[in-house]
Length: 170
Length: 128
Image (cartoon, each protein chain N blue to C red):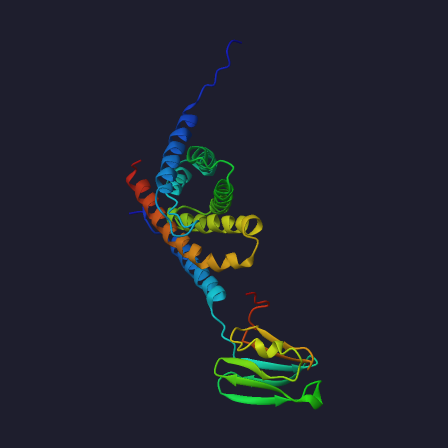
């Protein structure tokens, strides 16, 4: 027994590669101005979807958690309110993706999963924001805006992921 | 070729439709402005007059301060107010026109309240 050695296996390397792509996507997105906090394209979710379809839910969950942790560290948001919102959204959408996982890919493709995950994402964030940051039901008056954004970005991200998967690039 | 590579699959459309429905339902529930349609006048908690907010009229109601005068409720399209009240401090009169669902003017000395209600009763509380 000599020095402690961590041997990354191919799966570790693969997860790290995907996580790096997801982190890059969320950093790029942080530079895009948004009229309303919470309305974001969620580009990193394209990566999560690709991992989900190619390697399953566990790997997608790993990439998602790494993305939230490392992404917030790089953005200087670790343990800031935005971090917890991001984490609650990621957790909720992973739950939604997990619940949909038994459905066959023939019937439910990346687009449907993406939209479901986007809605779960914003629902998780709204719930945490309501419980913690804005303890007033007036917050839910913004829900239609958030839902509409989830719908649009969910579809767009899903189509992008589906095309990347079909063409087998990335 | 095979549905496994189609960009949009049956379930996807289902999820999208459900998403549109959820968004529309939330918007309707949260933004559907429920304009008040009725002014309810209560004396000692019992409804003594329900005035539709689509015309202009005045109603005089004899309240608990009977001999000192009637409480006069004035209604115009979409709003209502207490135009006159025999109470000493005139709070309900000074409150002016009410136009939001759920808002209330209370003439405590006369035991009279004027409240605007809509199809769904409007807001529970209104804070300014």
